[in-house]
Structure formats: C-alpha cells, structure tokens
Image 1 (cartoon, rainbow, N blue to C red):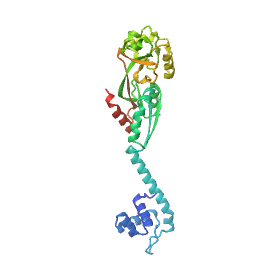
Image 2 (tube, rainbow, N blue to C red):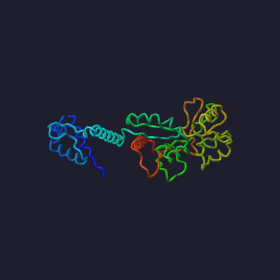
Image 3 (cartoon, one colour):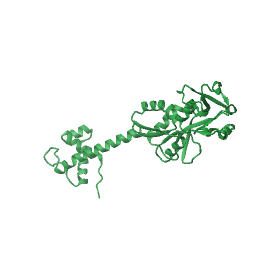
Image 4 (cartoon, rainbow, N blue to C red):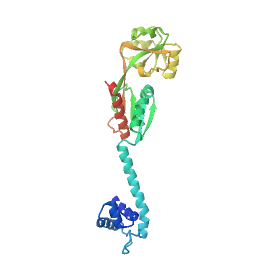
Length: 295
C-alpha cells in the first residue's frame, strides 16, 4: 500500500535544505524546531528511509534524500500552480468562454459588450461565433458553446432562455421608394410592393401581415445578398431593427406600427447544467449591461 504524503512535511524538508538546517528552517517557517523535526521523522517513517544523515549536526541529505529533494520540489510546485489556477478560475480571473450569437447581435451589440467585459476580466479568453438562430440553438445544445444570444422560436426543455431585449420589426426599402417618406407603416401599405422574404420574415406569421408572405415570390437568407437586392430597388423587406445595417446610406428603416411586432432576443444556455466560472461571469455581465432593455 502506497504511503499518503502530506505536502507540509515536504515543504519542511525543502526549507531545511534551502535554509541550511532545522533551526533556520523553523525560524523561516515560524514553527518550533521540535515540530519540524517530528514532521520530518514521520515522513521518513512513511517512506521507510532516512532523508537526512544522523549524528553529524548538519542537515545533510542522504542519497535517498538527494533523490527525493528535486521530486519534492516538483510536487510542491505543481500543487501550488494547480491551486493558483483553480483559484483564478473560480474567482473569474482566468478561463475561457465560448459564445454564439445571431449576426445582428454579434456585429451591433457584442463589440461594446465584449470591450467592457475584457476590461473587467482581462484574463478570460473569449471565442465568439455567429450564425442564424437555429445554428446558435444547435451549438448550445451540442455543447459547442456555453452561451448563445439569439431568438428562441420554439420552446425546448433542454434549453434555458432568459429574455434580454426586444427588437422591433420594421420595413426596409431604398431611400427613393414611395414608402421611405413615412414615419411608420401599416401592413396594408406594403400590399402591391414586391416583398423579399428573409430568415426573420417568420415574425409576421400569425399576424394580420402574414398574408404578405403568401404573395412573396422571392426569398433571400444571406444578408449581403438581401442588402444588394434592396439597394438595386428590386423590392422591400421586413427586418428587426438590429438586423438593419445603418451604414447603407441608400436604405431606410420604417417601423411597422400595425401590427407591432418584435423579435425577443435572449441568453440561451443548456438547462439544468452549470456554467463554467468564465461563462458565469459573461452571463452576469450581459445581464447587467442589457438590464435596461429587459422587459
């Protein structure tokens, strides 16, 4: 049966070697010399061999002690590194958090949110990926990321969804389009204008505006392609405000007043599963920063 070695006697041995004797080690460790000697004798008994030569009044290591000394150092150093790493991780000073977000959130909100998080937690490594809402959901479910920022279209018992903000839906068209001059729009004003459907068009489903979808003959899922079509004047579309790319000067966003529709964006994580300390820090940060927007 292997002997159980406690770390404290190993530290005593190393202190005796480093300080040149039992008395000096006891002084450096703020312990009594008899306590140091007793701990070393107990360690020698457990190992079955003497670590120090006897009877010469000096702290000289035996050949066995010379073999043990560098290994004691390695063991003590490894223990201390492990403790420091665990404490840093638990106190959210170290670690890694993997996040996925829908593109509109990744490009519009995450830059400022991550900037403030990095300032408060400089030792935490961050990986941010973007993808459409179903992709984000799957990444969270499969454990590829710990946190997702997305819309949860369908309830899922395996996922926990905490609402963060509501993103209003509006009409997007070119600046010279007849609808562009309005401050807000009723859905019936869209009738007769070619509607380009996209991945967020499902927000119209179940509302009076749903019949617009049935009349649409064009669907584009890629935002770059959708923007190009809108700038070419091929049609109009509906988008949540965050998904509207304001840098495109020729495009206008007009809120849809009737029906008033919103995309609910929230924090997604696996249900009944703890987060890593780093991910927990990120969750707390996002909740704190976006709290003013939470309904």
